[in-house]
Image 1 (spheres, rainbow, N blue to C red):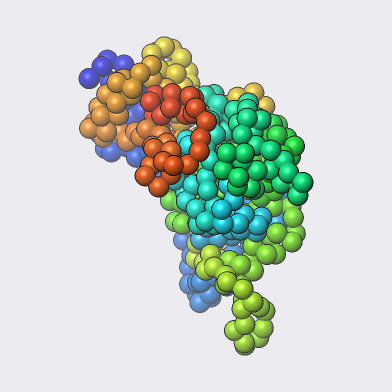
Image 2 (image 1 turned 180 degrees about the horizontal axis):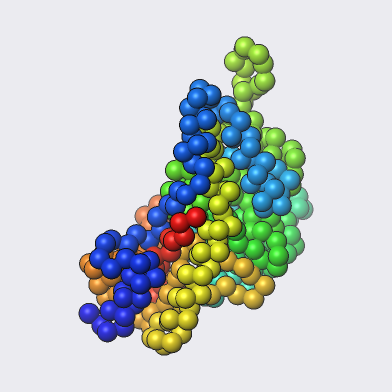
Length: 387
């Protein structure tokens, strides 16, 4: 084992006050009203998708992010699928996204029978590159008389763009939105990992037409499984809520549905957890920034590995901390040694264009995406405070 790897393991163990036990990548932290609210939910008998905690969580997540409306869903993937549907993404449409992303992004696009197109990321944000997006569209796209943008190679309409704030690091989202506005392409922000992250003092998820979040078990706040979409468009929010509740028309006793709907509404049990977690979010973010600062200082002093920080005008939640190695061999060696010694680390995901389902999808050169995939590693990032 390299000496610097031993030093990193020792530092991580000290940071988490854990000398011998397994250290996970990102464990949930339950230190508030979780049990109290769960008990209230059970006592109410409203444990499924009808319940006051669902409504409360929607109000509170909207207020926290500054959005006018929020719709709670079973997962972030469901929320993204719904965001695409309510923005009229049709079968055979193309949706621009990233090759460097979690597979849920590409899967949700595929649920609409639409086709992902993968754009490169910026190496400093790990999110969609405005320059690469602009270049791709100038080379491959054209606006037609109907006002929409079409891919000159495939002939398909390019309906939407789904950039992701990778690991909670805000991308240059205002530039992406500006470019997409020029081409009449809807922006749906995959902010699944970035609750508590801001760009130019505006919460992520609020730059596009719709933003989505995930509250999976490994996210900054969790309700086991859960997601939400946010928007300032009242009609989109109403339609999303309608479709996520099986498209059921309101009635005291009849079961009448006016279109194909989805069982995507967050259950009250999950929402109870989500409300309790949201109450603690600011303390979580404070602890995570303290950890990120200590990592930054350590790696800057060591000088062997680069720690990824937020760019200017951004405030990251540091959901997962990221370090960059000088080579794939160094990355692989570090992953092997840390995991064998009880410290969980992970590389970024396999790039979407390398997976069998998406290998035929169009993409640009993905220079930065490939570079990052060969060097980036996530290190333990759990909340440590006991408040």
